[in-house]
Structures are given as C-alpha cells and as structure tokens.
Image (tube, rainbow, N blue to C red; front, side):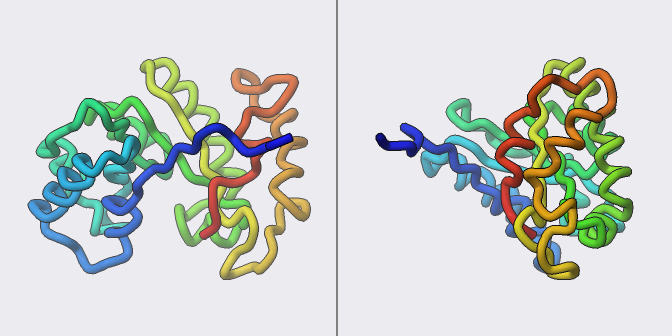
Length: 191
C-alpha cells in the first residue's frame, strides 16, 4: 500500500527567490540565467516577481527580464506576486501561471508584504477572481506554515490545517464545501 505519488513536480525558483536576496544582478545576467535554466530539462520555472521596486529592488526589472527571455515551449513559467497590483502586472506581461504568497504568521506577513495576514487573504479573493477571469491560474502559497523566524511555531490557531475553518467562511465567490488543495495540504514551504 504505497501512498507516494507516481510523480512530483519541481519548480525552479532561482531566478526569483535565489536573486531577490542578493545585491542587484544585471538584467542581462538574469536573462542568461533564465535561458540557461530553461534548457536544463526542468519543466517549471518561477521566472520573476512583480513587486514594488522600493520593496525588492532586485526585481525592479521583472518586465524587461521576461520580455527578453527566450521561452522554451516545454517549460511552464510562472511569476510570484504579493497582491492584486502585482497580478495585474504579471497578466500584462503575459503570464498565465501566477503564485501569490500569504504567511501563516501575521508578523512575517507584515514584514514580507506590509499588511496583515487577514488583509492578504481578503486581497487574494479579488486576485483569484481577476486571474480566473483572465484565463490564468492562481496558486496560493502559505509561507511560514511550519514555523516563523519571528513568532516560532505558526500562530494561526495552532497550525495551518485549521485554516480549513477559515476557508468555510471565506468571501463568497471562492468558497466551497471542501477547501481547495492548498488549504488541505497547508503549506508549500516555510519562510
């Protein structure tokens, strides 16, 4: 009785996550990195993040990087956004796969996207409607789902699994009898 999946999907996040915490990398180098990774056989790449340049200056050239990238048709590319404004930018750039992040830790969410977890969750409802209405997909990533550098253990009612209750009271338009996979799985990663 093997409960392991038949396959897993790995998303390369180096062009976004790997570069956003470093000193700004020249645009040409980012494009070369993205193009090189596209030729490695990896099937999914998180290419850029559409954030305010004052918040993360390393991603200020996201539009240009994406415009100049040589896209491999065998690769699914995605962009990370912190909010609906970022989603509008990602759609305008041509992305159809978009991730949005929300932290289980309110402190981490405030430090990461400058608003409370509840404010992010409210925005996610609008963001999902926007993306689906545009033919794009949305993946909600729960950061700090198993621990936080500021608060320790997740404080959202003890564990992200309790978000199922939140889901059942979520804004009309994206509520269902059972929570979607992202709530059931409770976390795509930690900080």
